[in-house]
Length: 537
Image (cartoon, rainbow, N blue to C red; front, side, top):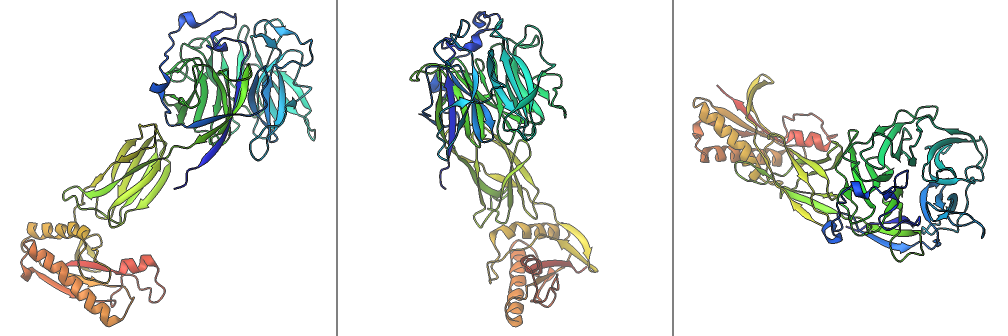
């Protein structure tokens, strides 16, 4: 199997704050560290954690901050505090000039062009922060602070004037804003129905928490809902974003199991609930701050960090993520005999009950699926004549791993029913070697069901009638079916059944179950290849 490589572009910037990050400041500029215990563990303990990133400089960084924010018409939008002219005023709260929106072209190799100012309307003399666009890119949600309080951001909305090339109109301060509350890092979900953001609202668990609001048809927002204490901690959580399919929430946090500063985390969204977050690992996270991770495509995204080695402030980096593929394999076996069971349907589903893959086992009874690290799966095995079986499996390793899990099936009880005016012991198909009359090992399990019925009913006599499909000559098929019926009778006799209770006969192709003549499908042919057990008394 070929290894897939994905291009992931990350943004790393510095707002003039210590390595613990700007999240240590609340709206009043007071450190939250004294109230919070930082759950810092070593980089080696976190490990790769199921991710493998290679970090490269994207070539557009300055000594000021550059943070990625979103896409508009195939351009990357970033927020930067780089000075415009020599007389730009420095904000004492951040140590940098006010931030503005810039846009960059992205070439086919993922390289970024030099930034140019994005919008003369959205860029003001105040400080702009993150922005996000509706799915049709006709509405923009953005945050802005004012000169009086540069650390408190308010959330705005504007719409794109029809047939314009970037004229944003009807700017509106949204109703979810509150006094003395900062709303930051807005992100519209891929389906366009929700807006995620960070805020220090009164019901937060501590500092900044992540929230979500429903986006109404007119673009207004519903009542904010805190994402809860699975995601939010007593420390700060910021910069929410979602995977392209909307199944995973990414965010930055000082809490959870953390290498240091802000780390990047991911949480799977299942039935509108958020799973326990997982650190994205030591190939992307450092003891410094990693912020603002969002995706451009599968495994392609942007992040910000003030790690060492940059040009100063938060710098833009490119990261290549080599996807870690793991495997789950095993055998499907009969519970009583441990006989390998071919022709078994094996289905793999994730914890949202969505099918990931399926396979029909071969003669070795084996199955094999690719899986992702740290996921929960259900493996279900189904075979005619056996009870369905399901096993829950957790891929609880972050490196390339082969997991082994055998699945045991229990045979069903035989059924006696009337078919075409005959009383029969209904049984799954009996399999023979191709073009031969040797009984396959898996079918001995089925024949043992006949042994059981006959031993429980000592007066019962049966006819063993074997049939073939219409492939080959009629005379050959007749002889083959007669030998196959005889093989089944010999098995029953060997296992304690009196031969006088058995009559075996082959009918070849003379009594097809499906009379398809020369227009038979594979399913028709399979149905016609059968052994029937008819009760004679």
